[in-house]
Length: 491
Ligand SMILES: *[C@@H]1O[C@H](CO)[C@@H](O)[C@H](O)[C@H]1NC(C)=O
Ligand SMILES: *[C@@H]1O[C@H](CO)[C@@H](O)[C@H](O)[C@H]1NC(C)=O
Ligand SMILES: *[C@@H]1O[C@H](CO)[C@@H](O)[C@H](O)[C@H]1NC(C)=O
Ligand SMILES: *[C@@H]1O[C@H](CO)[C@@H](O)[C@H](O)[C@H]1NC(C)=O
Image (cartoon, rainbow, N blue to C red; front, side):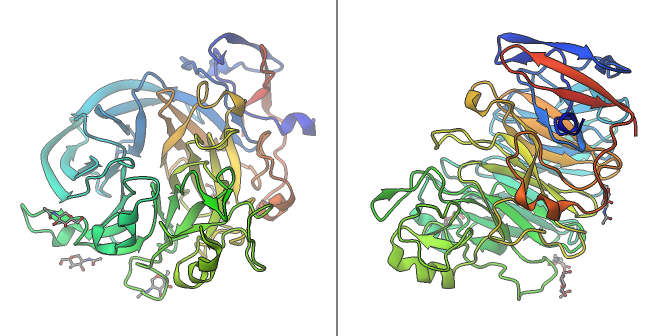
């Protein structure tokens, strides 16, 4: 049974695989997934790792990106180029949730990606590529009023998301991440241009009617960050982390290195409490220095260079990259495209969405992963900076060869601190999924497609293997796909 348990997941019904073949379900014991009524259908069959359950919650959205929960537990989602929708949910327990009602909250074709809500639930924030807006939000009438521009002057092409994060530790501060205008954007090398940076703006210090100028105001949390779309604050220590999408098409020493270099990055930006001895506001390398992912076959690999080392396109500048720039805290597979990072309530886990590659022969990414932060008390990843196994798969596409065409592409995350549920948008399929760590689940284990093995022992922290007792196994014979799932029904 151990082999079967490593393939535990959830069955989405009816499954439509690669747009052509239908799945058949055979219930092996106990209740069928019809226990979860009105389950919407998916165009792909996600593979769910041991210790997690997952379920499709919403379909039919138009390019859903950022996601946040309001004070009544409804989902507020940005549909890129459309506006903001509010989805109330019927809660049938566990990961069994269905959409009860959908309303349009904001119609604005310029909204690109991000959404935030204040801790008291009464102010909503969203952004275009140029501006950040705030609204008064009435959760009882599900309506907004009093739109105000609070930050401006962020226009650039190419990377148009402007990620917003309201600090929970310093509720005055709104963090805004702005990416580059092109693959290698030379403007990012001059800090006053305000390109490829994360800046924090004090909303309490903004006079009525005033608007912050992004490039010249606010406090820098870091620059030389090509396109850091995910930003999160550790719930215990208040440490700020971001995930960066690094460059495409690079060569070094006349050798094309782009398949597996440079790596995507998890960067640390210190704390928002005034402490300064933590690298905050420093340069993280772009567009001059990049993080090493694959060391095998890397041209002019100097001794001492390892995963996460900063390198230059000209090897003679490697020394300056190592000494003058801040290195990532973790590095991920090149081109996996991390778009969001969200911590669970006690800061033991960081969920990271990987939207997936375009600049690589064989597709990579297209998954939700989780990074262990140990017991959460230190606010530090459990793995060392040169690890290649820090991201452990939670929800993956069954067949990467079918990506991007027939794959879900993870974007935004919202974590419900009360239930531990993690909501995730997929813009390619117009869907929202919910993922939940099963009660009693032990450490993180490799999912069927994670390819992680050697270091997983480090990630076991509070238990053993999930007991199979009380599980309903559902085998899904997917024509041409052969994917197995199981649905937990108790515990
Ligand atoms: C916008 O930012 C640029 C720097 O990128 C600056 O030169 C310009 O003055 C700013 N414009 C306004 C209207 O503040
Ligand atoms: C934000 O500004 C207000 C008003 O000036 C000030 O009292 C507060 O300390 C500031 N907060 C931070 C985190 O700097
Ligand atoms: C800020 O928070 C960090 C992490 O909790 C802590 O180590 C540091 O002492 C704090 N600094 C101040 C000035 O409170
Ligand atoms: C953190 O919270 C999870 C539930 O989300 C729980 O399983 C785990 O035991 C907690 N860990 C610690 C160290 O408190």
